[in-house]
Amino acid sequence: MGLLEMATAPVCTGLFYLYIRDKYEKEPYRMLFLGVVWGIYTAFVICGVGRFMEWLLPHEETPFYTAFFSSAFIEESIKLLFLYSLIFHHPEFNEPFDGIVYAVFVSLGFAWIENLVYVTDSVRGGAGTALSRAVLSVPGHGLFGIQMGYYLAKYRFQKGKKNLAYAFVVPYFYHGLYNYFLLRKENFWDFPFLLLEICLWTDSFRKMRYHLQQSPFRPKKKENF
Image (cartoon, rainbow, N blue to C red):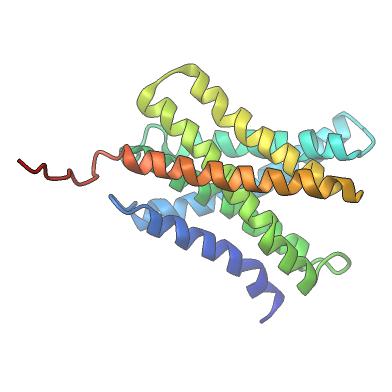
């Protein structure tokens, strides 16, 4: 398997998984394709904004600054803007789980471009990089997308401005911590990172189940008399 395929496979796996989890009312292929394309657009916008911020505010790259500002803040804010523009007022956004689906498709569209850059890099890339990113980075972006989509859907269907704020703050917080623990080289940070992984995966599956249960397309159970 070549590097291109190795960079693409985990993204396709995540997209397919979310597609089959959306079991009550599938999204049209055109909208799913647009979700990925808009995610690809975010990668170029994020790159441009990141370079502009480096020029505007020269700084020393520390694990904290890189994790919480250079990476998480810029990436999650721009992804939320693109996601909101794509689906919030669209008629296909007609059940809570749709928020998660489109957020993950946008996030993995971004992750695909990012993965290609890292995996094919002549210095840092290679099969080892592809494997580590398939296990950590790509799933991480998908999980942050679940958090974003969950709260954006709550804002869409249950109102409450706090949910719109949570649609940014929660994935930003998870993303920042995730990157911070990975950037620290000391073994001490391995255990907090493991706890964060368990918490993030558990919380994300719980939120997917919750929105699936809220679907208006979910078949009603017949009552026995």
